[in-house]
Image (cartoon, rainbow, N blue to C red; front, side, top):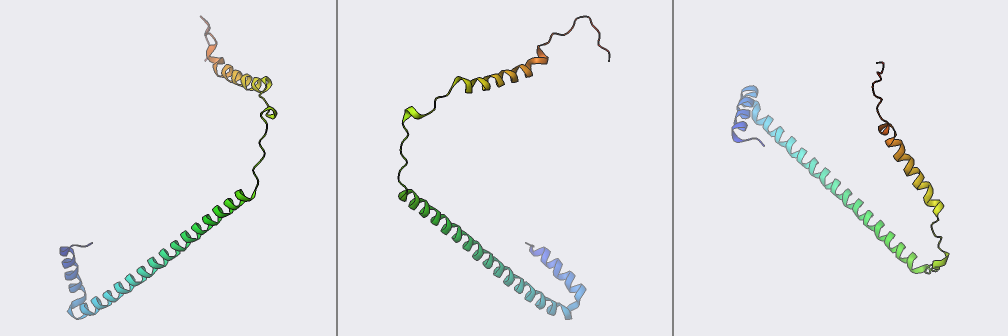
Length: 126
């Protein structure tokens, strides 16, 4: 926002540039333009807020319908029969072996070059 000294300077420059005859007419026109601009921005803001409220209302309605449908689906379907514990497959040693082998290979690959001893007294060509 402009302070009072800034407004006085702007008024004096406008008075010098426009002259005392045209200054009131330009001020009136500027006031009308500013009023129209405020009206348009308020209309835009209210339209935007109304649209946002409508979108939020639709989202809440959709969420409520989904909850209702899920509740009806859960109430309508009979509970699933419990599986006996004996029928559950037990993990086997063959399933664990490939995982261990892959982990060992990864460790060997990562540690391989660092584990080699450096040659003594041999010169390397550059």
